[in-house]
Length: 116
Image (cartoon, rainbow, N blue to C red):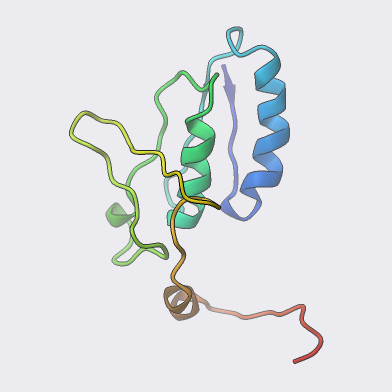
C-alpha cells in the first residue's frame, strides 16, 4: 500500500503525476486518499482523486462541518447514510467557492497583479 498525502494548495500538481504511476499498476498497489483538516476546496480535489480507479481502500475524508462553522464552499459534501459520498460533476473541484468566505477567513493577502 502506498500512502499519498496531498496538500490542498498543490492538490492537482501532486495528484496527477502520482495517479499516472498508480494507473500503471492499479491492481498491484491498493491506494487510499484522505484529508482531515482541509476546507471544501481541498476536499473536492481529494474526493475527485479518491473516485478514480485504483483507489480501492476506504478513504479518510470527513465533512468540513465537523471542523468548521462555515466551509469556504457551498454546498459542501456530506457522508450519505450508506457511508458513501457523491462525487460532483461540476467543473473545477466540483464545489463552488464563496469568495466572501475566503476573504473573511484570510489572515494575509498577496497579489501578483502589478497593475494594482
